[in-house]
Length: 489
Image (tube, rainbow, N blue to C red):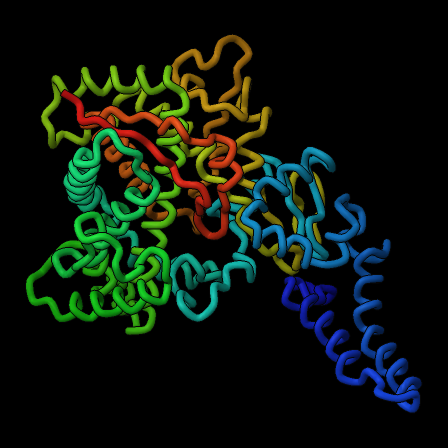
């Protein structure tokens, strides 16, 4: 970072503020004799905080030229609170509507709502290192997603890449089909009664990722057995279970092709194997991140389909024709269905409310979107704002309209910027699991709509569901997606 960076993250602001408050509380006078000493100590405690705040809002700060809310320029605490509420993606989009393409969202942070900027920031040839926002804490520290330095990330990425080869993805598709049929069968037993589909999708995703990560060593059967141990709701309980499964998988004598098998082999190019600690971090990250992110997108995708009955009817018609002609295990032809593909792409556009992917500008600074950005600045392109921008998707950028992805789009003058869907990032830090995640959406959606008639429950509250969407590192739902299901004849 550049030498002018002072406390670039909210924890620094919080420490300063807490220091001042604690000083006052500790030395608050019990008698008049303490008054002068207390006032002096209070002044000394607040001086560093006042100087830093004054510098941040002064014309001498390197980011002084960029617009943004005054409070955001002073401290990261306000934005940290918004992150806590899970509404950061909405707030950042609102700020761009108010202030324009480049917004100063923090003392040393810029959000740049420009598709051209994404090429400069994330492109493989000149991609920037990740910011300290990728420090996850002890649990996953060292896992692939949280490695911030490009050269170290590239080494670990080579190990992961083997797990997502075409051959392994084909095998994974069979697992996805089997687990999706199992999900449909469980739901069919609950016909004509309100069902919390969100909960079932969460269980399905953990069963899937258990199989893909640990193979036959997996004991995760949440669809059949329920989540009695709180694997989904309690990260601590999940970690204990996954550590047991990982130990069992490491001792397995029968060769299996799963994610763990590639992590155990290590990097064939450098002959370097993962340490036990790194192996644990990556395996735990694979199953939890793969489960939480995929299930969140699938829940939102199914909501949009069910809330738009014309989309539901058109999609089921295409699937009926497909399954009447195709072999049940022929997933490849499923991936070629045009309308299903359009529905999935539109679901990714609106169903991945990511606020952005922060990167650190190199020490010498750089030009982004014709603007010089000082070294050490944390920059990012707000993914959600890009995905609902009228410059990239027009008309009706806020509406679920799969036809925009079909030939002819939404008519004359329509705009479709496919590369503006940024949910998988791009470049050296791009998501290796992109193809697998998309296949999950194709297969699960197709199997559910093939086997079941699904309607939103009569008491379902659309506004409550939408307002209850929270985006942290994955998407959380405070209001369940309740449906009524009937098996197809």
